[in-house]
Image 1 (cartoon, one colour):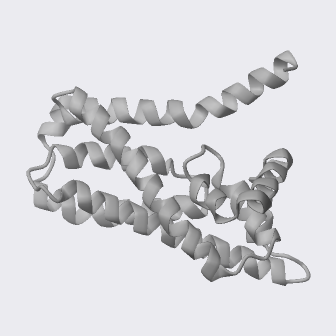
Image 2 (spheres, helix red, strand yellow):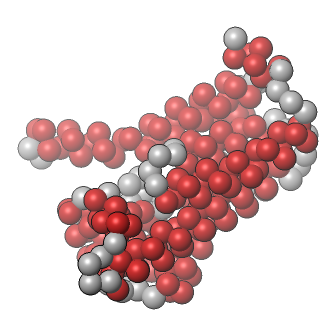
Length: 206
């Protein structure tokens, strides 16, 4: 069934015309609200790009994904800063706070004090690390331009990492759909492993 769907896909040029804008919108949206598995999305797009004839497809996926992630981060940080400056806060600041566990926020604040913007660069590479570090930056009243400087390499590294996962999955299988399944599975495994580890540690008291 999946193989038949793949065979009936529209021409490559049509896929690109629809796929790149969709990738940009979904990654940007996923940076704002946690409804889109953006890492799996980028990995899947990399698999599809790997099987296309254009040598620039992977480069375009990397550029689109990193730019969309940066735009989403900047918009979310700007909305959060409005809440920090307001006496009554804002729904966006509350939403960011609700997504950051107190212990993760405390760790992020400590590491931000010790290592500065380096923590911001690494935050996107750690599963569930982006929001606690962003909230620590907001509570520390880091200026938007300073946050943006640290977020650029963070988004580039994030896009490159998940694209490499997609390339790995796509190179192992002859059919694109097989590579997509492998890349998505690997992405979800990487993203979910830290949460499972924390639950196990809490359950067994270590």
